[in-house]
Image (tube, rainbow, N blue to C red):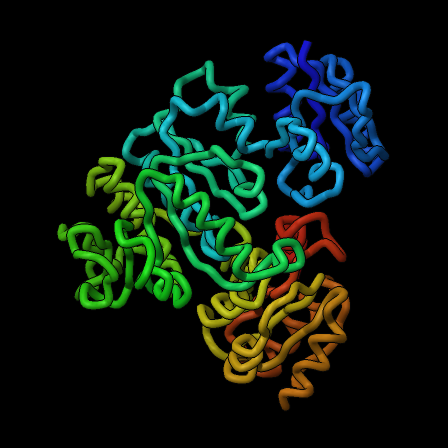
Length: 451
């Protein structure tokens, strides 16, 4: 019986373990943590015949090497044990690649990029489903990819719409979607990928394996690369036909307030409810994928009129006393936070902070000075952000430390400063105070509804 080691007892790792167990592998699942909730999962999986080791890090026993190692998305690809495993010729892959091996017969759309992935993936999924396709979303949204393998006997998939991070691309060397979308490219995850060039090449590797490639032509970095590379790609722009990087027959663009795809009028853009030019761009990429997949105009128009966005990305929680409370917890880097603050009405009360990432905060601070009546700082990054704001000549900030204090103080300041919006757009990861950006956004929502 072949033997597999799986690292990470999250949703992806559990699904991968069950897939391999179903295929008669001997499966050992390990996780460094040993929490009470993991102990409960451990008991359940042991009953299914899956060995679970908690408080454990994988080591390679020369006398008992596994045939396969599967890593969950958050596990660093350059972990010494994984480097050693690859050097020894052990098949070492990510959970998404494991799913791909079983789901190759289905057609895939792969969506990657620094920002905009989740909304674009959700839009593609909504349009494909409106067209009658059995087309679930997976990866960083919807199902873990291996959960789709476990469900595939119920009804074959017409398309699989996968949101794919750089971490997942690194560990998925054969994953080859039929259609690939690259939303944006700005510095992110450099603590893992080290250089911008490495980060770009990881993303590019996925797109090179896709049969058809769709790019955001309004992203400065991708636009620049498109002048010398990606000549056969499909390009999108909100700036009209003249701004396209390709022949209009391969472009999707806004012209006179209409969405135009490959030379054909699709629908007026005012049907689309989501705020911000960046969301119009996300829509254009989704329309490009839909038309390449043969989806008719009616399904696109229907989705434009009904799609209201995704949780934690410029999500309107409530309006209270004329003030909109908006959850943008998914803005985990400076560029995403710039998009968030750009998209809301002025003046705004901004809640920011968490676990800081590397990156250039220049544009973000400039926008804060232009649009924020006050900034409330939480989490690990609070004192660093306070110093940066002070040094830039902006002093309307307060260190409040916790989300509870930030929401209450935000409500008070909104009244004092006649602000139209209280916006959570942290520009940071969440792991200092929360399990995930979703956990952080859910807490913000709960506190806003309690006001």
